[in-house]
Image 1 (cartoon, rainbow, N blue to C red):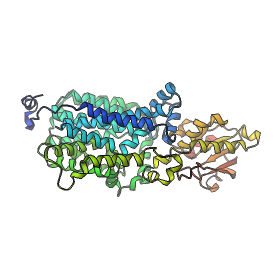
Image 2 (image 1 turned 60 degrees about the vertical axis):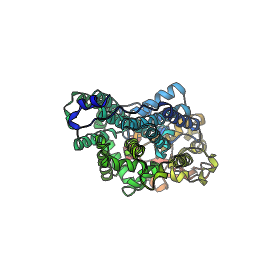
Image 3 (image 1 turned 90 degrees about the horizontal axis):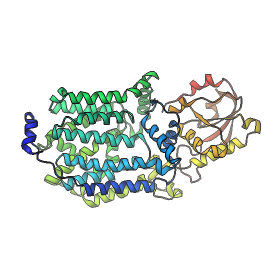
Image 4 (image 1 turned 90 degrees about the vertical axis):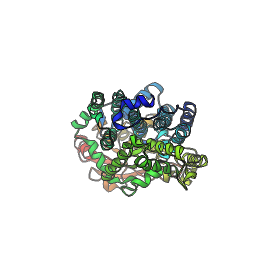
Length: 509
């Protein structure tokens, strides 16, 4: 599009962007491909994350929604396990591909803002080196795909701001529908982008039929999940309250600092510069709505005690804005080192060492990784966890063993027993945690229940008359994860049938 054509397309804004620079496909694909290959190569190390074990089971109980998430990621897990069986490489490959694709989209966002080769590579490199972005690409998780789709939505919004091509609105609607079936964060992102445009202009986009067509696509695409939530009492709202109460990442005080940490600390200088320049630079005025959207979402998630990575879908655009300004005007005085090749290399190396399974598992407890990336510790020890439950199960008298049931405190523990238990002769596990509660209660066999999770027998004596400690979880490498050291109880004399007991065991967290 020439400058004159662009001016004719939206002269009221006074915006006459030049033809955008060419897309540097080869280096962008090289960076994205390198990240994807690295993630796939490391995908089988250690073991399943508790969320992945949960997805395996949710995949066999497909529904339009779950208390803690929409339906798309369990559906993807179902497809992967049906085709490839229980393969960690296959299960995690889509996440690795999503991370690589995000790198390319980040570079394309810089190009839409007017960035040439340097700006595109700076943006793509920042995305590829960001700790949260790399860590989420290692696991099958809702955050991985939400990040990709949110980044793509912002990229298309930037492209629309440059071209005023209203055909992009239905495409954004499709992506919003996909995002709404992954996590429920697309709605606040889209609302913030709209508010940003209303503040900065142009405002005539609200009169475009294509916009409302895109909105209709988004609503229709997310409607089944919303209906499921409504029919089940909106458990996602209770989940949001639980997330706020748990105060992960330092709660409200840590909200902004952890954005800096999760985006790469040193490389955060780039997106902070981008945020400032979006508010001040005349060249970036057509895209100023991004800054207002980011600031608005910060306010919303600070009030609601959301997690800092909820804004990750906007990071690529902020990095891109900073990179474009540096490409045009040079780095601000005193911070050029933060966007140098050595800085990128150091951040990338530290990201790998703190987020990916690059150590022998026996060394992991002696590294800083479990403290920095708690998810790493949650991928260790599940086979040994299940083996201890099996040992307790085998210790029961034969008549009790045949009638025993298993109850766990969280979906990861139940998912581990579901994955490794059949080979050890264990019955199907049950849990009252999140979506697992909906997968069914135990049968009234009259036998004992093996329970793992509570720290003391006192938590169980209101449900059973006799509670004894029969074992203790040990992952074998001394790693302090959530299951390490938990007692395993054998509970007898159940006070109520499961039909009455099960509602009391429902728990969201």
